[in-house]
Length: 290
Ligand code: UTP
Image 1 (cartoon, rainbow, N blue to C red):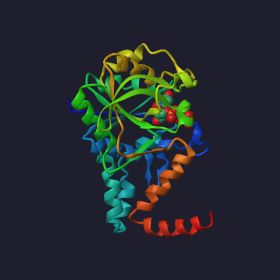
Image 2: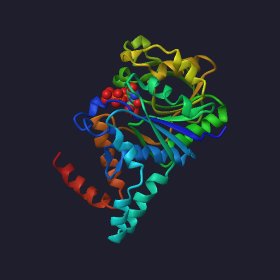
Image 3: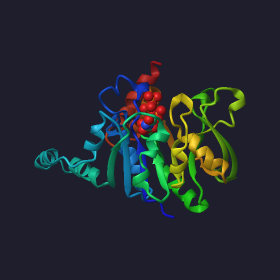
């Protein structure tokens, strides 16, 4: 079945990037000249997704404003002959059918996804975590949707993480079944002991889920950190016929942490058509002094 809908949970408090995220949603922080959330929406659109629900929270109104028309700004750009920027700005509200709802309390990623139950209805849907930007030749969401259509099972986007970092992520039992594809039959969120680590494969930023996940989430008790964890609900799918893990081809930047923000700025900046060349020359000079 073709995946048409996506959910972007973006209601988190962003405590790891304070004070930047105090009054500005972390999803609106830019990589060079484009906010994080726009990269994510564009990735979903590249996968053929037409309907997107963004889960926001108090103080995150700037996200909806970004995807709205801005007639005064548009007029000013046109009057000033700035056609190229006008075209860019005018295209943003047309990217997809975007809707917004609020998660009233930050009770965890699983709880945020549960807020999308009405929107999703009875069809499979993609989840794109609002602070994970994935940059590559292919849309990671498109790669996951293709795996869902092929196998008819829930799909998680996976990557190996450095061993010392696994306690901050999820850990999966993942057995290879094809090129960049794994069968995932067990998972744990934030393993605290060596014995709990199933592998160094972790779910990073994306999944495609069947609508059955909502019934499971409704019965999922708070887990790690006292939050309702999406991983705990996906564990039920993994144990019950398995999920597919796709080691997507793009590079993932964790825009919810300071180092991730810097890495994304450098790598996207180097490829940027307007400033890339000057930035490269600047970085080479800086590198000599390191
Ligand atoms: P994170 O745990 O990375 O986000 O959640 P956070 O809570 O904002 O981070 P810190 O630890 O305080 O810095 C992963 C994704 O799930 C969303 C976040 O917005 C992020 O995109 N999320 C998390 C929600 O939408 N609601 C929640 O209750 C928790």
